[in-house]
Length: 365
Length: 211
Image 1 (cartoon, rainbow over the protein chains, first blue to last red):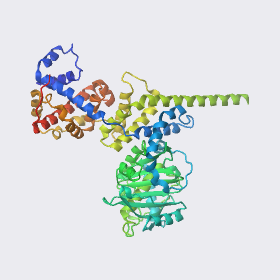
Image 2 (image 1 turned 60 degrees about the horizontal axis):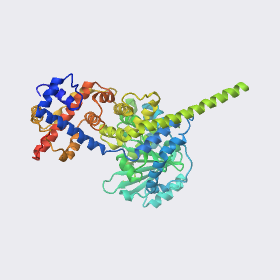
Image 3 (image 1 turned 45 degrees about the horizontal axis):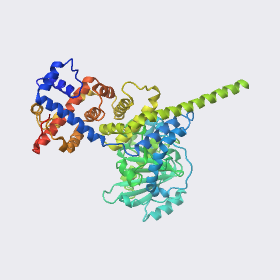
Image 4 (image 1 turned 90 degrees about the horizontal axis):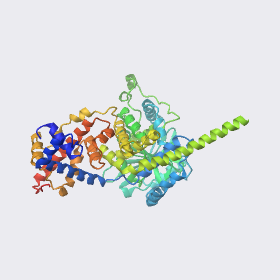
């Protein structure tokens, strides 16, 4: 131990990486020294202990199905040219996935409030992420969403004394047989609901609050946003898209001809668990990077609120690329683009959730 | 007309061949890459320390691997180090690091890990206390000590111990110099050694001599 080189030699010897012929004298010295040999044994014990420690850690049960679902998406992305995965390929994983699905079937009972089923094409998260044109575009869309919110299309804030109220009012207004799922099993009590506008279309927001922590969880549904999320079930297991703009977990999926989002400032696993979707196949690849980038660009996301709890506009000075003069002028409603890509749409709804929750539209009314 | 039909037939055959090739590639990819899912996940978990982030990183890794699979050749290290390397790159990309910065790692203040000075380390090693630890009682301590390590050190330890990769293979995975691998590995081991010896001393555990 009289020089750094000595240590290196000892470590290399312990790892079997020391050339015995080249370092014959060193090897001899190490093997003759009980303390150095004790260190060598210690290193080998450490290696065994670390190996034993890590070998007990395995990938979650839904990791394999998730990867395969993502590969399916890539195959589809590569085009109809490649067609669907071959029957042979499917047979490799259909069994395990179906088995997994069977075990999870009850977990999805909570979603029986969705409208009548319609066949949907699988949406490809990887493509969608690639189609996030620029951060500026998404940024603009978020501002637009706030602008639309702040104009005459302010959301109709409604309260519910029961989930039955939500079912009746929202079903009538949206033309969808909507029911607020019962999340009391996860500790979330139904707080209320409202109707809001998303992309100039009516959407429902159902808000829950955790009875102990007070954390709010918001569910959205709208009837004509089919293209937002994945519609598939891998062997019956729900697939969801995930983005996390500014710490707001946003899950999106399509089912039964409608789009659904869940938003909460909670870890993704907790949101999924609360919804009884703990083992859902989460499709995040590609989205993750874009979400991280966008989340940085649009900070801080929470706009100013007026006394009515409405969301007028994002504060322009706090958004990159906006002129300072705009900050002194009332923001004008901006046209919400007809096409809004997957991620920015998720973010809009995520931020809408954040905005409404922060504004206390329901809680304080 | 005849020419047009031939072109159409040719196009159809090419499309059909493309589909068959895609199915073969997919099967081959699953056969080569999916058996390593646990290993890939462990490395992802080790780097991110977060289950959700590890999940995302695994997905990203397999997407990248699948897209690059056509150009992949089973070289001397096999598919696992290849997947590890993709994961490693994906991790840094996702973290927004365009360039790896090993120099920063070398500047890490290791005092945060150690309870004593550099001399203490010499004493521990020279006295043989590390080699004489009672390893059966120390597993929990290893877990907590690992949690405090920098991700890059934890990853190197994992590749060295569980995956049993050589220095050269680890360097391939981490895309860094052999010396950097050795430096990270040796320092990580010494950090753990110090913590474990200290832990044993605090509890006055009897030690046993090695053969």
